Length: 316
Image (cartoon, one colour):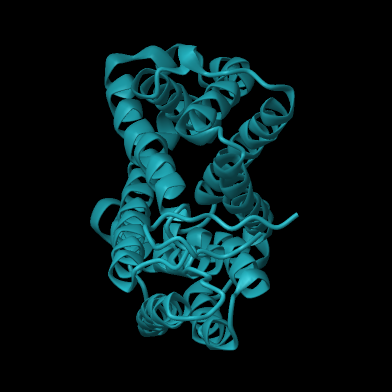
């Protein structure tokens, strides 16, 4: 099934104004990059909770906070229940729990930049598979090279952490695709809130058992509030809005900034340092993110004047 979303104004033939398309690309890019910063600094703060309540306890607080915030801001009680839509939401909730849990279990064993670099293989695969033009696909190559450099040297005892990071990568790819499907199905932000609430319900019993009474300590709750806002409530909403303005391929490669920002957050909050090869990797993934964005803007200008009237939004 193919669906084309129109988010810009145009004439009766459906041709969008070039200025409106450029504005849509710019706002979507800002949202995606802001989401990256929020997620990575939230992850660094989350790592400081691991010695107290463990990775699963931290995931529990993260999803609980996000569920409450998203339910209130999106007035979840007004959500219209439909069977087909709820099936997507339920799957989304399971993906959120698995993605967050595997990510934190990996982060408990690997440096933040290495964990995020491996997790980035998920959106990189989405970008490669859904790129709208050959020009956009070429930017996957420097992004992949940067990921390889940032990966660093992995040792045998890192294997379990690598497995968890790759699980998170698969879930991240699913998250991107399900976010887009949920938006097109009409679920929007309310559907996202419901999926997060479902995820919180799933993980809560496990988190209570593994974290113990420290889960409810005031200091723990304060940090959990920050983690929930930075890692879930804010970026999930930004991602949903960005995916409505950007092709999936552009959004996927813009997330190549995650290893770079993760390295910065790891340095500033966790004191994790990168070698020169890591810095080169950061430069490569940032170049790829900039390149894919410029390529999308060029495609938007071309499509605005095309006879078919196709706008910058892709089809899926």
